[in-house]
Image 1 (tube, rainbow, N blue to C red):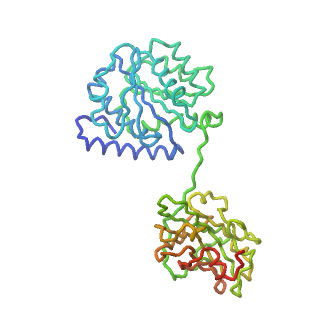
Image 2: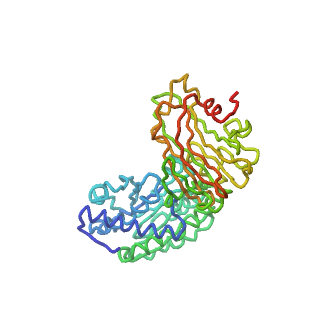
Image 3: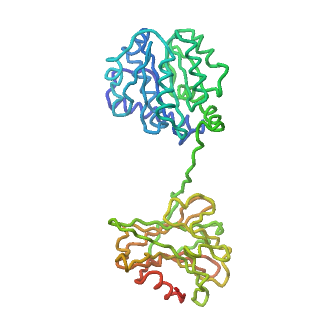
Length: 435
């Protein structure tokens, strides 16, 4: 996107959003989608840069860099620093203050002297390494200048020092300068990791967003992988995602075939989730599964609950998720392998109860939301969803749903029937000794 001036605030925001979409494509290509980093922009405000600021070009480049912070940064802000012979912190850039940022936040404090690289790099060390150390978030620094510096030795020293920290520096040279030092710095010896990259452009406004972001992300992914291998940056914990695009909401009394819907019944998951208006009280809700046989009876060992979390056949296990990582997304998750369920078991009843409900005068009237989910663990996809709390009131035990055999199929039936008396009431109902 080329250089533009005199845009309205709305036009500026729209332009940034278009640049943000282009950046997302670049990050996907570089396998950086979802990555987070602290993003800092160091901009040269030496005397030779004055016309760059008064013409609107500096405002334009800041608008093009801001999407990096919106996508990358841990707090969605672009940390700003200006430098000449010294360094000064500027107000961070956000979508709220980007319009007219240069006129409002930079020009009143424009330094306008000689060019020294070491002071801003020392400030990066101070802020991100000493004052705000973090192994969770790397620090991605963009360093924009139009000329070589007067402190080559000090700059080399600090770049070498930062090579042992979680800081990557992307130098950009603009204008007609030869940039001899920055070209040498790009290949600086004696560093723990190659933590700097350099590219130059005569007029940065003449290159597209696509090319600009590709250059900005050219070496950063390589450094990030190496920094993680060296322990400078923590490897992120990738949270699993559950595909809900094909989920079907089912109603009480509706019966759906699992056999016809989910090919692999050995990697089935049941997620039970709820929200309770506790009003400051402790509320303990437990999940139990009753394995009913063809005689409509349940043996003691076939009640699966917190004291007996896994069935003898291995077909049912509470608080397990076939290694998918999805169990952290629900209050309770039950791992199922229906192929292991013995042939004499006809039905699996999924229930929840409130512990010490009578003593605490609690009931499912306190439950504002309750969901029963059937999940294909192999495809990480939600298949059926049932809201089970709509007909509950003063009960403290609920048969949420049943999975049962019908001829040669496994089916699911939403129930949502409440009982008074907690777990004992359910055990009496299914002929189990609750003691």
